[in-house]
Amino acid sequence: MTYLPTPPAYPLARPRRLRQSAWVRDLVAENRLHVSDLIWPIFIHDRDVAREPIASLKGVDRLSINEAVKEAKEARDLGIKVLALFPHLDERLRTADAKSALDPDGLIAQTCRAIKSAVPDIGLLVDIALDPYTDHGHDGLLINDRIANDATVEMLVEQALVLSAAGADIVAPSDMMDGRVLAIRTALEGKGFQDTLIMSYAAKYASAFYGPYRDAIGVKALKGDKKTYQMDASNTDEALREVAMDIAEGADMVMVKPGLPYLDIVRRVHEAFRVPTFVYQVSGEYAMIQAAVEKGFMDHDRAVIETLVAFKRAGASGILTYFAKTVAEKLL
Ligand code: PBG
Image (tube, rainbow, N blue to C red; front, side, top):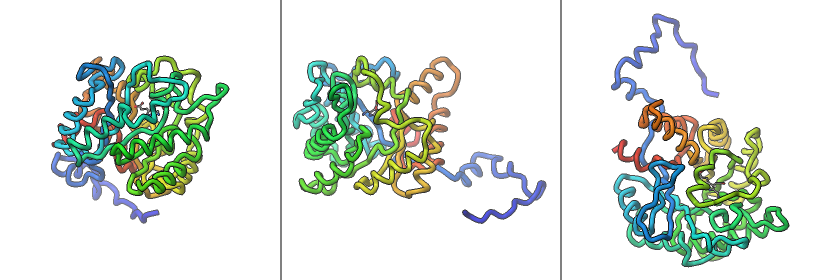
């Protein structure tokens, strides 16, 4: 605990003195949002059009690889440090065994190579999970209708190796299988990818706020729910155990997800571990703000900045947000 002297009483203390004008408010601001705090998630597709709107995410388009390269250049010029890549695959590539997740020429592998050769100085984060590749929309393999933890981990390891070889800088396991971080770290070390960073989705909750994302990656009907692997919204101590395990297994950075409904978790993780702690302002949070703005209920820029500053205040090192590019333009 830091020592806090008893504040003097009014009128010696008039807290409003520090709020009387913009310059003094700026001078004493405790937290500040910077463009280098932002990670921008983008969706890639393999159809013959440059951009395709996503109904549930107003202002977010699925991009062709060429278009993603263009956006990567713009993002780099705006000061964004990392892009997070998500695929929207053709229906035929979604199978029960998710084997297209391991294709060295798959959509995300190709995107990594294209962006890395055109814009080598932007970081690339790739999601490690099977949901864009399975026909049922789960992050893991289903055997007798149950998620098969260890068989899934074997796939995730291969996926991480394939994408590291394609140029991904950060692998981000988002699947919540047990033991995946250790397995991925061990394999990366063994295959000469000792510099690949792992950002684990360590405290990822089973959340209604992922709805629009499933539309974005084209999951038609998720069979059941993800509650046997993603965390229960009631829990906070469990988040600390998950984070502790992932750090011990070799994660360099950890993530809490979703964002605003879980600010308490961001704060606890940051204070308990003092490791780079990221937060994902997920699709439902984005869509909720856009919907309210569209109705004229609140101001877009103020609402967005307020949520992002809240993450900083809670202790986040950085934020994955679909608002990243728009905000970067404003921060310039
Ligand atoms: C799944 C994954 C999800 C998101 C990122 N990776 C959804 C889920 O777990 O169902 C959500 C992102 C968002 O909602 O913006 N591997």
